[in-house]
Length: 292
Image (cartoon, rainbow, N blue to C red; front, side, top):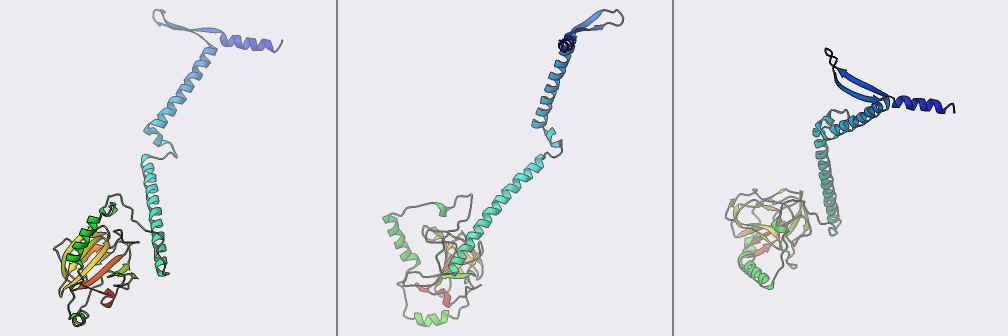
């Protein structure tokens, strides 16, 4: 009973009403008044404090004022963080691509078939990425055109052996420096030499001449063909980009294309180089050194 009385007195004091009056100092006229209790004052102060905290939190969270809080990142810092994240992702992708490329090189050195096909990432759409289907009519037409205009091996003269001695005196500029992965073999209809080199290096003209073909085919990708003197023709297949147009004159050692990987008849980045004389294929390794 003794403890209950102080609690009742405390509650009674909190609920006790007080009147706050505002008077006119000259006329003592009552201008405004309000009846309050201590409990009302504590409640109003508590509610205002909560509202003030909520309002401050909203202002800090959704306005630029948050940048002035120590430890909170600024817009510039956040932008740098995003850019660094993008750069790290690109770097990881590039390192992964290099690892695959080196794995392919090791497989080639060991005499094995490359297990991984390396493709260069690109956001643009290239002609070589378009998938086609060969029809019988298309294959027949392509074979007839190539037979007549490009690689006609029937026009062989009887003086080829004598001319071979003269050709052997010509100084050819290497189209590219690298590692030979597939040699000339006319029995298997492989009329050229395959060379693996560093990515994105230039491919050079072996002699002075005129570009007679700069095109793209389904099997060989981007191809450039140059007519030289003495009925010599050089052919560069599977390049990623052609730098010359048909009809242009080129000088020996001049860049004509970019090394790459295009066409369906390819297992990885390499240059397929062919050398023809009077419609007959020559072994490029008999005239050119491709070693680095």
